[in-house]
Length: 98
Image (cartoon, rainbow, N blue to C red; front, side, top):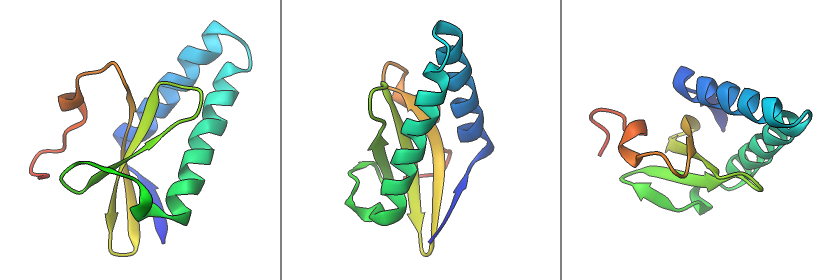
């Protein structure tokens, strides 16, 4: 399976990493490692993650209050967002996705 990130998801990750790095040197790197670990799990068993809205699935990040929201489409995995758990869930919604 191939995995790709929507531009919005990449931006979410970049912004979160920068925020953590500003708080403590090296913490941004730890955030990136948590994202990498979640991506590895998704690639291994994408359908093992729970559905949270229609076909959208969620992979929790270790140590951080974020989830990767993604779709499994045939042989592709599309990461829609890196979502902070305190945000309004409607903020990541993709129009037309049910």
